[in-house]
Length: 108
Image (tube, rainbow, N blue to C red; front, side, top):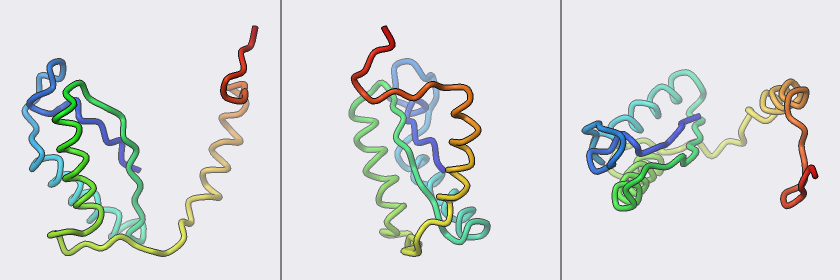
């Protein structure tokens, strides 16, 4: 799983880093290679954020292009995910620590 935040982008006002879209795309390519070599090509990315909307838009566009295999020669696996049993085990452990409530319901 990729935690896809764009706070490290050169345009981000708070990050103080110098990452560009090319850098984010290169990181995505590297992570896809790791997924191919160690996870049967399975990979998921979760968008986390950043504080410059243009940087987020461009970063997401380029990372998605990489995930789709455009111009990179890396196609995503179309096999069903085998992560579901593992995720359910993780949820079972975490349930002890978080009380789940339907969205919109308060605990008051």
